[in-house]
Image (cartoon, rainbow, N blue to C red):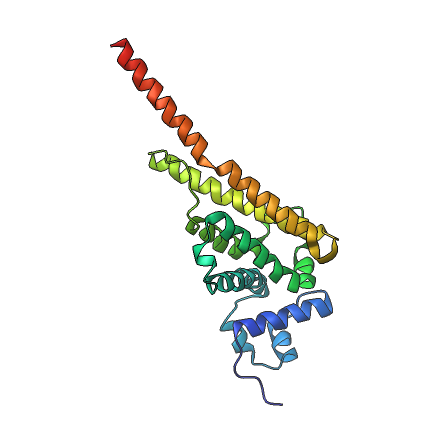
Length: 219
């Protein structure tokens, strides 16, 4: 049988996911994996260096598929950051649910330590960039170093929230993962309520006013 010639990164990801679910382990070698799926070994290295790189690529693909679907929606472009993030969550977890067997296989041993799991590193980088691009309003501190710390804190908090939601979803036994949907809505809305800077801005402005007036009165 002739070897398959047109092998994409998505093809290799699909082959890999099928293999580990059927055998409950990684392939023994790239050679054996390529032979099992009837393509030249060299085609593998055009896209990935190792099987661990594929595992990172799987979760990056979940993000990319989610992001592309959202960007294709005209409505999404007009959403405020809160609704954009909610849309991301619901679409992302639809992707995870469609591939739940693999996701649970890949994450089960690490579900209590997802923060340091290397397979999620590319997902984390893409998600952090996505959060930065949402335009979530933060307090303008007027100090570059503090603003950087604040931005980094936002992305790290958002990442931890996503990991927490993934863990909740893995443990969710409700029909159609309805409890996860509720968890997403409540957690994202709560996060934005906490980040609502308008009352705090008003308080800061009021404090500045009081400070200025006190100086005037003392002169």
